[in-house]
Length: 221
Image (tube, rainbow, N blue to C red; front, side, top):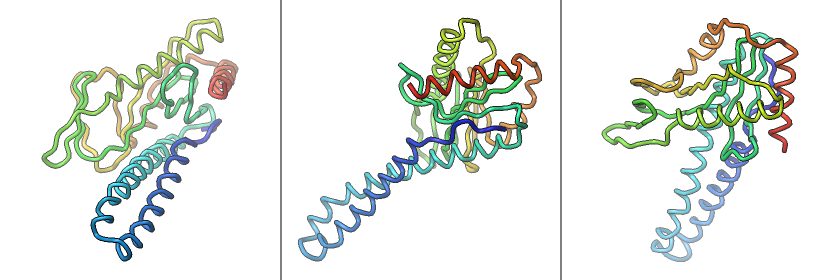
C-alpha cells in the first residue's frame, strides 16, 4: 500500500494543544492551592477536567486512525491510501480513502470502548450501566462517500459507481452488536481481509492515479 497523504494533522494539533492546556492548568492549580484557598482550587478544577477530557478524546481518535493505517499495511502497492481528506463544502474530514483496483473505500474510524449497538442508522453506546445515543457513524460515512462521489464525478465528468462505505472500530475492548446495518461495519482486525475479498476489478492503474490526484487537489483547495 502506498500512502499518499499521512494521518490527521488536525487530530495531532488538537491533541498537542489540549495536552499543553492540561499541563498549564495543572501548574496553575498548584499555587492556587498553597497561596490562595481551597475554594479557588475547586473553581479551577473544571478547567483541568476540560483539557483532560478533550486530550483523551483526540488521543483516542489519533490512535484509532493509526490502527487503521497499520491494518491496511498488508495490502500491496496496487492500493493508495489518502488520510484526513477535507473536501470543499463538506463539514468535517474523511478519515481515510482507500483506492484500489477493486474500488474506492471511504472509511470512518471509531475508537470507542464498551458495547456499541447499531440498528439501521441508529447507534448507541453502553458503558457499565449507562446507555446513551451516539452520532450515527453510518450516516456520517454515507454522507462522506456521497460527497466524494459527487466531487469525483464533477471533476472527471464521468460516473463513479464503486464507492463503498465502511465503519471500522479499532478499540480491542469494544463489543459490536448490529442489526440491519446500512453500511459495512467491521473490527479493525477484519478490515484488510474484507478489502481483499472485494475481487471485482473496476479501476485500472491509470484511473486510480487520476482519481488520487483529484482527491489530493480537492483536499488542498
